[in-house]
Length: 268
Image (tube, rainbow, N blue to C red):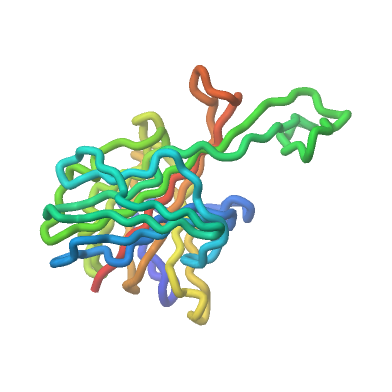
């Protein structure tokens, strides 16, 4: 289904249909990872930026993580050589000496905590310490985010793609370094290893603010938790999904709001 210039083509095999997501969900700040190149040949070093943004890729608030790391071409864990934290952006540097795919990730990062109150059957975020008088129940919430991007030096390798990071997974079935205009990008969305059927996903493209109509798509997964996407414009895209669930045992909050993002390049 081709809608307009820059839109996704959403094949029915993935049951991808437009989803009515609340504006607060669709346009909330999202953390991203952005490398200086997606496909390397002779490069020995990669620089990655990370930030929270609404318009990609215009950094607004630096991402603060205790779990920055690199998944190496063989699937083992490596560390960034340099991490420079600024107010609006983080700059990370990593050597890429071996051939294959590198996965640059924020890792699992825990963010702000808040209190929510049940008022007239709906959960509302409490501003400050004052619980509404009409609240019948309260609970605590905390954010958990993961941001990923893949860079391949010469031939791609699969091992880094299959490493699981966090509970809410955006699992590329097609290798992220092999996304082209004339082919489909197959993905799955999983939570605790289980497919997320009918789950909302948003996709944005860098630079589309200069188009006649800014690119922003909101779609849902099929019954098998999968998406099958194709594109009619090359460029750098960000895919993001969110899910709220009970926090695991021993957590510092009652529930967690999970967000996972994947930055990828569509090549000609």
